[in-house]
Length: 169
Image 1 (cartoon, rainbow, N blue to C red):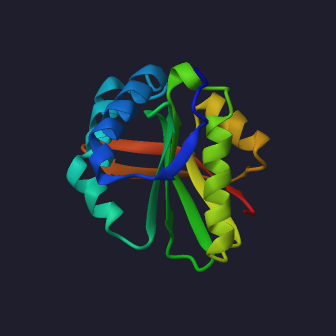
Image 2 (spheres, one colour; image 1 turned 90 degrees about the horizontal axis):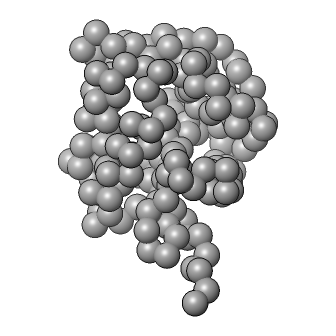
């Protein structure tokens, strides 16, 4: 039996629960040591609540994509137009820890870059935690450069201490 190729497509509302489970698996594997467990739980609730994701699926300036192998979710991305003309923000790009370094992240990013070009965007930006060395290295391999540092309050006493990275799509 041949393995199905990786499929990347729009997130279906029926897959929101699976997306939330995958996000939890990824965050609990990756972020301890970068941010506190309390901040992990806060951010998971803040970003992956089913009603929030469902609302974003109804917007025309936000795009969610799900990567699947053999019908199983293995990664996802989310991007949105910013208030800056010609700028798209890669808001989320995550791959199942068991599937990292297999090209899934690259394919998700290629899809986001294609969307940016199709929308006529001149800049693709993202925010990455300053202590997330593996993600920073990956983004640099993909051509991103650090533009500036930023600290953003996100509520409940938590902040995101990030780099803003940028690339031409």
